[in-house]
Image 1: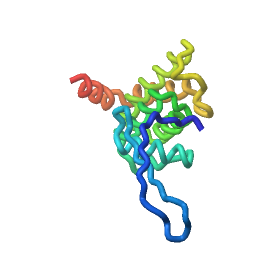
Image 2 (image 1 turned 90 degrees about the horizontal axis):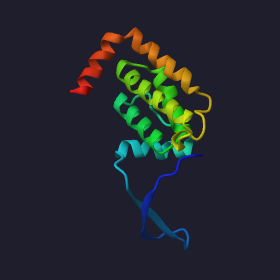
Image 3 (image 1 turned 180 degrees about the vertical axis):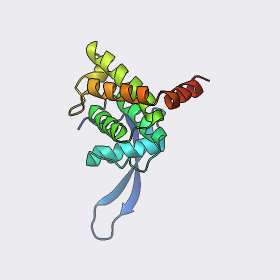
Length: 151
């Protein structure tokens, strides 16, 4: 598993459990980076189960999760997100995912620590080509997204 978050932890004592003499502790975490609680929740879920529910989530959450996975070099989570984006491609997702795979491939070719290992079963060059083709096929819709982001 390649998910590690730099978290500051503080143990909070909740008292003794009735059934045993062991103390029950709950950890309270503060995230040092600007990560939304929804993204952090998905990351923790993925860390434990090696999957997370993305089907019902808005594209903005999937994109934010992908950005965070890329930023921290969480390659298995990034692979998972890219596979989801390929399966559920839409103009906003294609616009972002193409940029992400392009950056990933550039980092990979330069030996960057962001891309220290491959995207496992997802070939990042094939993913880049997939998103490029999607953009070409849906150029009008994607160009409107690009213009709205630029403003």
